[in-house]
Image (cartoon, rainbow, N blue to C red; front, side):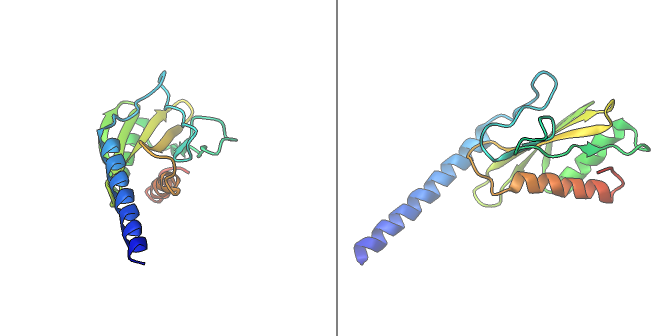
Length: 158
């Protein structure tokens, strides 16, 4: 019995150390940036959602709609405020692009949120992805939907 408890404790310690190393690795990675002016596609892992790629993909989410009465230039400012309210740290703001990072409470894993304004289409494309690992337990999709809800509540589109 004592040996079983010792093995169990060693396995738990190994799991905690592994998670801590992965979290540190996620903090040392650079955010993804854009690819040919668009948000990068999601990897094969299920820890990413993005509105810029086919709707039949498991990674797909709908873009945020721009309301007709909101100047496109003001949209990213408003969205930046909402990202901060959700706990994100805005890291880059350009004329048509906003990047932010979120850190998990436990271990400090980093996820990246990217927004790309497409004024011609009247939308803001969104991508949220974990920097490391495979599963995110749905956190990135939940983050996008929470942002969408705040966007609607403050006069943004769907």
